[in-house]
Length: 238
Image (cartoon, rainbow, N blue to C red; front, side):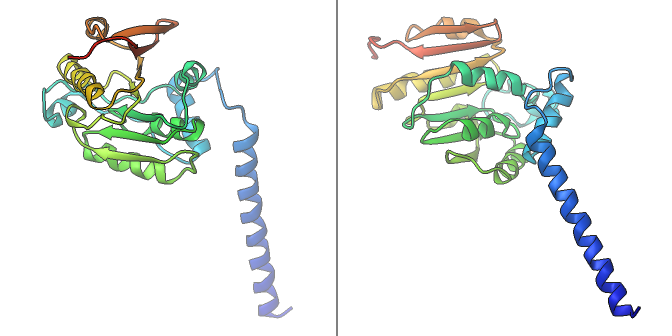
């Protein structure tokens, strides 16, 4: 047997192994259940990240968030929302192709990716103040093929233009002062562009801030973990 023949067989074997490995990984990602309920949240998150080829798990201390928050110094630790909660949100949230979804404090982009993968909307926008998290969110978003346009903006959520936003998603991203400023900006934007508004809050900490907004009404309370608010139809804006 010549050296060329041996080299050719070796290359063939390597190619078969690579194809088998690729086929096996693809099969596992399709066959394994979407929900692995027996796993703790962190491992469940890692599993779903692996299926999509992204990395959204991790944690960022409140000290770092405070140091980099520009407006009100009331940042919160970064922690990704549970995939199960996102699926539950989708079960109760009505969307149309005219909606624009804004995830305020999007972190590494988990919720942005979920909405862009599962909802036909005009666009999904993630707002993140920390450049390192925004970069990771952009990288994660580039790894998936979405059904709706999506993008990440690195800026302070208190200063973002919400004139076209129709759905806001918040997973305890900041403190009371920032939230109050955002809701006031959103209310004023309705005078410029009257439109239906929905606000989805997961694990809302500052419920009294929402309850103090006369122009908002709570429409759903899902297991005391997810709240959906909407703008009152007949509220007269100043």
